Structure formats: C-alpha cells, structure tokens
Image (tube, rainbow, N blue to C red; front, side, top):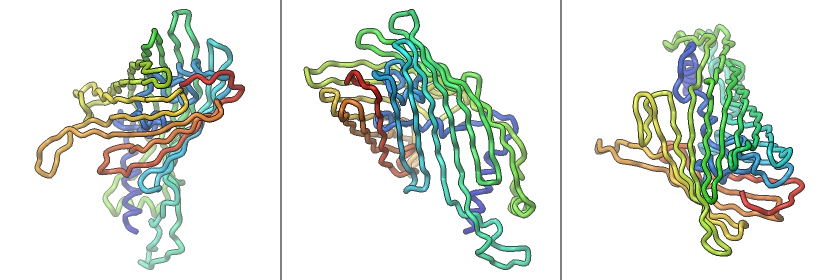
Length: 361
C-alpha cells in the first residue's frame, strides 16, 4: 500500500508550482462531453447545436429547436476507477438569444490514505487507514446571441472551477471563453476561444505534521500555497452537410486545436504554438438513427525498435432519436493513448421540453 503514499506525493508535488504557466493545467476540461462528440473525436465545435453547446461552443445554444433542453452524460475510465459526469440545462429565450447552466465532475473516489498506517513506534495499525477523493468540478454559465450579420451567432462562458484532493489541498479558479458560429448554405464554421484571459487556480494546502514528515523523509518538497495559470486555447472547426438521398444525409467536420503553452506531441508543433487536427463524420437516416466515427489524437510514437511512427485514435458511436424529444447517444472511445487508458463506453442523453419541431442537431 506504499504506492498510495507515492500517489499522494506525486499529486501534491505536481501542483506545487508557484504562479507558473503549467502545461496541461485543468486538462479535465479538455476531455470533452457528450457521446456524440466523443464518437466524432471531439470534432463538433462548428456543428453542435444543443445543450452540449454550452461546453463546445456556446454560440450553438441559439440553434436549439425547443424552449428548454437538458443534457446528461456519464462515463468511467481506467476500469471504472475514474468517474466523469456532465449535466446542462439550456433555455432559449427567443430566436436570437439563449443561455445555459452546466456542471462537470471528474473524480477518483475511495482512495486509501496509508500515510498513517505505521505510527511513530513502527507499529502497523490498519485502523488508521482512511479514504479520500480527488475531484475536479467546473460550473459553467453560458450565453449566446444572434447578431444582425446574417448567419453569425456569438457566445461566451464564465467558468468557476473547484479542485479538491481530500482534506489535504484544494483550489478555486475562474476563467472566460468566447465563441462564434457562422452558417452559410451547407457550410458551418465555428470558433471557440478558451481561457481568453488565462484561467487562474489558487491552491491552498492543509497538511498535518505527520504528512509533512512523510514528504520530508521521501525527499519531496512540502507544497505551499500557489497559483496555476491555464493559457488560452483556440479551436477552429468547419463542417458541411451533404444530402445523399431523401432518407440519408452526411455531416463531415474537421477541427484544429491550437494551444499556446509550448511544444506538444501533436501533428503540427513548435515551441510557441501546437496544432492538433481531428476529424469526425455523422451519417443519419431520416434524422432518427445516427452512425458516427472520428479520428483524433494524431501523434508520433517511438516503438521498441526506436523508430518513430504516426499513431491515431479511432472512435465510433451510435445515436437514436425517440418521440421527437429524447435523444440517446453512445460512444466507444478513449481519453488518450490506447496503450495507456482503456477504451470506455460512454452514454449521454438529451431531452427537450415544449418540443415544436423534430429537426436535427
């Protein structure tokens, strides 16, 4: 059980960075929400037009077809160790404006804390083993408005972030996003600018003397109050609808994530900016049954023979619309490299109130 103590030490030392620009800070906000999006490798910043738009592109909230819409998602990763949940309530005021309130939770619960397993006299006492959770929360308020420019909608998010590691450490953070969506004929373009003011997470710690002694004995730095900074990120997407027949249509979309926190292992990279393209498609039958697929996480990997090869992550999924008000979506996906994390089954649903039309997303 000593690996639990090691886990705690790694968590705290990785957080103990004073006022630095931390790569992958708040990365739980980059996983994505909704089985539709995950099946399409998160390539929906242009085409999304339901309650999940609050996360992907708040400008898309104006495209909701009903007065009210609820979106819910649940998934688990690493053989059920990590739980990932999302919920959103979207309200359309009129044809020109809409808003949403969303909550996201990513957490690992019931982690054994063995830091006090052995007392000062060297005695092992299993009664001293407790448990804690490492949880990340995000509360998002979204607003969207249709402009006087034909086809152009703008939107934005205000994000409150709460991160907690048991009773040992916690942080509060705040950030802003802005977005736009432009539709012309069969073409749709979307732009999401995340953390435009940079997002700040202020960490504080509450370690007792025994925990500090454990850190000191293992040669680790005792964490102190600090601030993490998440640098801005831009996501650009372009999508097109193809009418294949009276019953079938095809949506294709390409997105490019542009990060500003330095070199990343993505397809296009530099010491200043990195660009990560990903692709998705959605084939539907009468806007009732949907077949989805996507390719993302394109990067170079070094094999056992020390030869670098290009790898990618495929995703697939299905969707069905029931009673014109309920959509159930499924994705078979992963949050990262296939060799590190297990593929997961993701389910999500969307329910519309006061439905007046049965048009698609």
